[in-house]
Image (cartoon, rainbow, N blue to C red):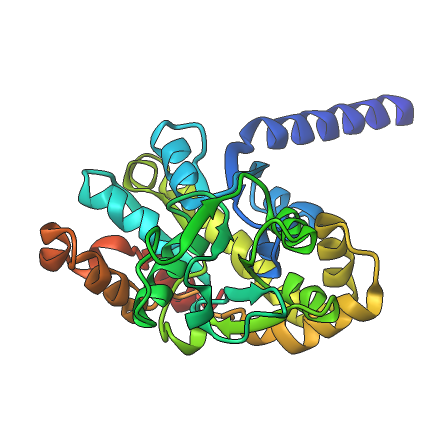
Length: 323
């Protein structure tokens, strides 16, 4: 009899876990840069927050906001990380993308140059390497250059580099290019290599979305619980970053392929925990800034409202519930 009860119990457990796995929602979630501001996704995957909330997540590395947007509109990616330029341009052309959470609300890009270049004006006639055209580094580089009186693609040649930030830094080191746009923690490495951290874009662009989590209104309408659970995942992951230094260092070190623990610790304490937003709330001022820039070339942007590009319902609901 005891043996029979034991068999029934094992069968119940197998049925329970099989059912739980079957109910897990498949979500392809893209990230666009090997930088700590996107680490909540990596942590969610490695620590198990996706599984906790019934999400079978596949993380996909896609360089460039424009490519992320294309993949999302094609249904190949359900959620992803993208800067506001690509999102807003897509929506003005008829897309249905919307931010449901934002990890960083500052332009965390840095213009890194050969040590012979000591001012932005000296970039005239030189080359600046970015990721994909239409991505955050490209979009912000053009704004910054114009603010310094330089015309992108005329006074300064902007080069698309189909590689991640380590690849860009390697090309700068080779001398084949004079400047690149990268994020921390590669900026720390660049400084130690003797390059000039010529300009932090946050000094020129006061409000921006460097790591914003975007999805489609179609997915929100069809599967609101899936989107809500993904927002829970991100909140759990961000809280983990602030509460577990060693665990965070382990994950970001693995994804960034950096084993130098003092280097990672410096980055975590001096940069990462200072730039991440604990609340994940999208900031309207950041959208307003991009709409202002787009309005110079696209009349439709002048008529758009920042609230058209954000959906705070899930964050509002979770906050009200005390999550």
